[in-house]
Every structure is written in structure tokens, then in C-alpha cells.
Image (cartoon, rainbow, N blue to C red):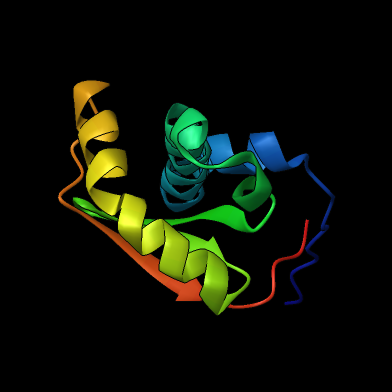
Length: 104
């Protein structure tokens, strides 16, 4: 007995809604972007294009940074960024910085 399977494409938002794992990943990606928007005004304009939101792991959040110089400056700002996030209701106890090339 052969089983015929038909595969059809579904939009990403539909797949995410139908899969708890994808739904959770979508939610975390959205929240990571919202966190970056919440602290953006505390980051010098020249550095903003060097940073992308990264993964959220519990109360730790990662920022992806494209250069060691940008990461060094961000390290100086971490206390301010943490305070701002917490004052806006995000429960963040640590911000990690990860170096790598950023693609839009």
C-alpha cells in the first residue's frame, strides 16, 4: 500500500501559528527586535548600524556586533542599556556581545 503525500507551501506566519516551536522562535525574534528599539536612543548614532538583535536565553540577551571597536564601546554602555531595558519592563540581567559579520 503506497501512501501519497502532497506537499504544499504555506506562508511563514501560518507555519509559525501551527507549530508551537516556530511560534516561540517568532515571538523571541520579535521581542529581541523590540528590545533593540527600546535601547536605540542610548546607542550613539554611528554605532547603530553595527548592531543587530540576537537570541534571548532566559534573562540573558545577546547583541550581534560587527566589530571589536563597536563591541568595546557597547561594553561601556551595558549598565545604561540594562537599566533602560529593565525600566521598560524587560527582565534582563545580562547582555552578551557576539562579534561577527552582520547581514541585513
